[in-house]
Image 1 (cartoon, rainbow, N blue to C red):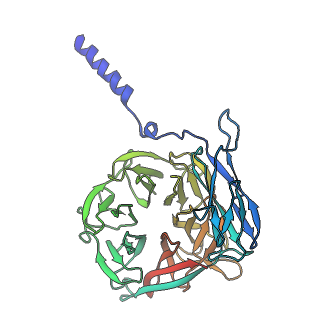
Image 2 (cartoon, rainbow, N blue to C red):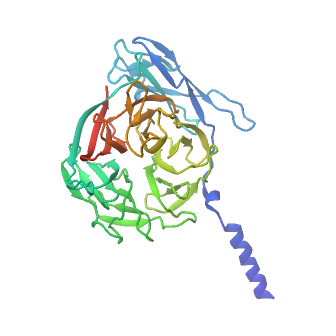
Image 3 (cartoon, one colour):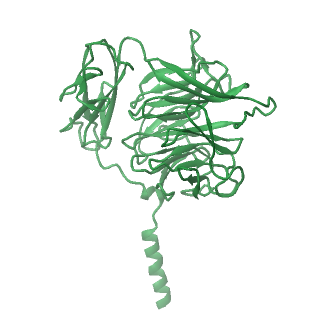
Length: 429
């Protein structure tokens, strides 16, 4: 009888301390805020007042924050070149349009869960324009396979801490490093294969602040994410294959938050997984469905400086969550027959802007044919989901895969075609 009572006691203790991934997920402790307006077009010397509002929560009304600090392009108060902003949020555009014409209004509100609020001021009447400033490519040497000298199916791209490009070659089962000008440097890891440090259809590559390189893989029954040193030496593998909490089937997007935690999308499990920078599982969210907050083949992911998380479904839209998985809103919906229907991947920049790689209904890859003959492969939205601009590769035959953005705002877009494989670099005029 005594043994059974002890066993019952330990069972009760185990039940009391059994914590699900949902219970482990942190809860948002504060009000969120919004910025108004979130997108404006201004003439030179024009003026616009911005304001921040703490949104209403349960039994608490909307309110103005007690303190807001304003900056322009992260310059406190701005300057004559990009425009100035005073302590009340009144922005005054510069006397002449700056280059680029897209200016970032940043409000810092410490009371808000999303501490940094972003608005976009475009100086001039037209949307900003991105131009190709450099293209490098390897010619296809085998028409049968579509292989170039080093690449077969480039799928993921990142910039390492030395300013070089790292490319995940899915069907080639390699991870390659190039300079930004396209000089081949070498391979990471130990080549193709299913062992640790080898690759089997790697999809996405992402670089941590400390320079370590994370690669999502498809290694049979092995874990799905590998960590390498900045030099490309194997360090660790994690994220076991499967459906239970913390496990992954097909990781198609990765991004780090400011704390160094890794957020990863799982296409087949229809969820977002969160790990420490060492690969320890923290929590997850997501379920299959078409309603707000549910997921429909989540592919790309981006995390801004607030740790707000943007997830694009392959069929649209892009959804915004806070770091805890609470749904905030959605944008970038499918727009047939001339607009995007598929959204293959996404990335973002330090201003919280989102860049979606879009595809047309008529083809698995390639530019969307817009009315008026304008082709689109990349669509840019600001942190609030406002459409900013869109553009395509300089060569119509180039088909998008994904892109990345460096700290200078340059966009490195990976492309494939029947004749060549490579990267085009874009800058905003």
